[in-house]
Image 1 (cartoon, rainbow, N blue to C red):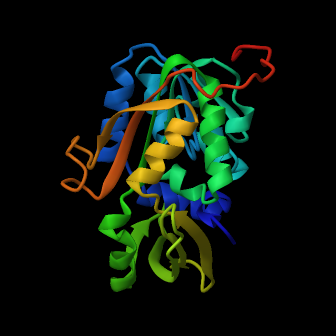
Image 2: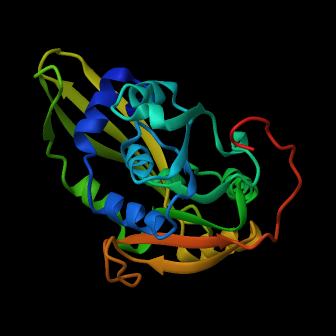
Length: 266
């Protein structure tokens, strides 16, 4: 199944075991807290690790994700009642309702098509108030992270809530140049559970956009890049963790009209 770790309830448990709070969450939360009490859109919120922390920090948060199973898991977590959860995409976000929009956990890279990416940025521009910020990360293709995935086929073991364990390893199956936007990398996660002989698979493709592509696509969507970091401690590009961490501001340019939603979010 494609992106099964977000859609298969069993693999969602594995995802939560793998993806604990880390330095990336520290940075995103710190950047959000630069604007206390913000209205925040967490696009691709998944099972809500950062979403819940944002609400706990006093922000008003809408978490949107297309994966129903991930949202169901998020709604069961402590504090979930403080977040508004929505199944959908950026197109479902209300207009000019947010001070800040986030895409974390490399959500931006799962949007592989150029038109879909440009459309997502346009929708986020409409969702933000003029001057609102967009923050997201995307791996720097110059770091060639997929080569380390392919070079290390060893499995990592994780303990699950029911006491069983799972071994996870990643197989890179295809790397396409993807010019001019950046490489397209397809890989398969393999899951072997101690409580079952069945192996489950999750296939995904990520777009590794170049810095030039990110800057130009943001500009076309009406964003101005304020900061571009290379790591989780705000290092310069090429000197950090092999990331592009983008902080951009909605200038108002490139907006098109879209009907407002009624209710709490617009």
